[in-house]
Image 1 (spheres, one colour):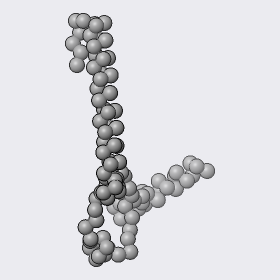
Image 2 (cartoon, helix red, strand yellow):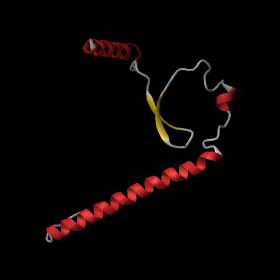
Image 3 (cartoon, one colour):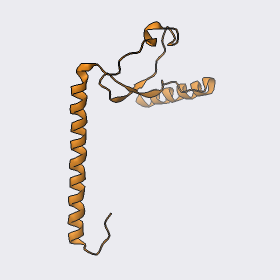
Image 4 (tube, one colour):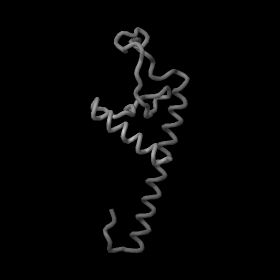
Length: 106
């Protein structure tokens, strides 16, 4: 049954590409969420176009003031993770250099 559903979905997608030039599934786009992190969302149709909708034309704040602390903590955790990964990589290179002293390790 699952294979039949996959075949039907593939056929619908191919038919949509032939008719409209676009796949049947909505496109995924990268957008900033409320916290200021990039996330993937799917495009969707709206009843009112964005250039006519007055609410969409207002300049929304990208980040609310209460979010700044969490963004700072998130970025700090990301930097710490990267720093420890680099230290681990250096230690690994050092051990390899001790084992193989004549080798050029990048």
